[in-house]
Length: 362
Ligand SMILES: *Cc1c(COP(=O)(O)O)cnc(C)c1O
Image 1 (cartoon, protein in one colour):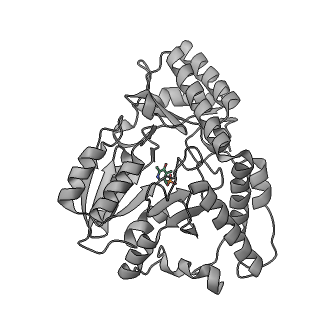
Image 2: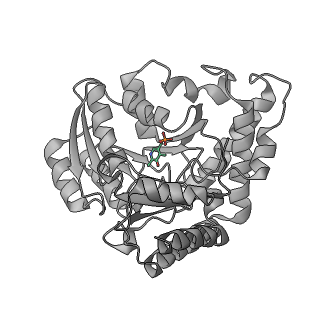
Image 3: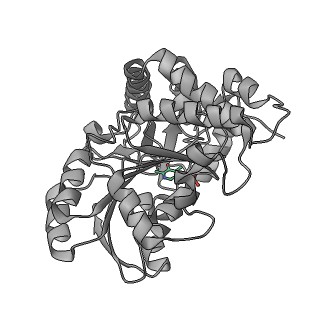
């Protein structure tokens, strides 16, 4: 199998040796031992620090899509209303998912190269009176970071809606401040900034969220309710993953040892370098305003004279893996993923050197 020594895809990210070593432990005991619950509780504690919450944390099996679905299934009944705040594919996806489970969804959409306008969201929320408002912190396909999470949280409070935020590709690269921003359900996967395998999902849950979840009483694989009792009763709805839980512990510990401010700064520097090098070689940044470009992923237009297929093939032949795109951005916009283990100025510089060289040879 071919591997790429210069890995700059926007997730799954390269897994550092320390995380691989922790993952690669044979615990020789089941996930129902006391030690497993201690590890689970330690991870909950680290996640609370990472995300800035005193609320509940649930760590489940499956990558992040499982909890995007779960958060909606657990809070919406058929006919309930969801307002999806969107400026990209993931934000728009929440509306589709809500409709698929029988809810009524309205989209408050901004163009993909911009971020949501909270004044428009407030108007829509006051008129539509949603039960749930969803938003995405980092729109990974667009390479943007939504700056108005706090304002959106205030709007959710004003209209009595739950505020659900997908921070799958930003948490650890930028502050998410769950409690301060009024986030009722926050959603995170293990394979982006945390640089672990795509096997775990992390949800933060406020008291307001639990109240709605109790009312809806969804039962199914993604149900949150059984997880509320896990620490107390030492029993889980299914077999958990020792290896992944140990890998996650190593990943979270590494970020805490580095310090959150240092981790954010490392991401900012890698992103700034990527944008500067891109500008110098004549690439056009996809976000209209550089100020909303994400610290974890940079999106550029595919340069004139190239198809993405040809560019991607030329880069991969040189050992560099970047990210393509989806939907309306497929073939038009490509991405450099500098999150987690890949938020490394030297690595980004190596990748941009290859990109420059390939573009020059055309
Ligand atoms: C990666 C990602 C997800 C989860 O999707 P995957 O299937 O794990 O790729 C959800 N939301 C955002 C914003 C993401 O970047």
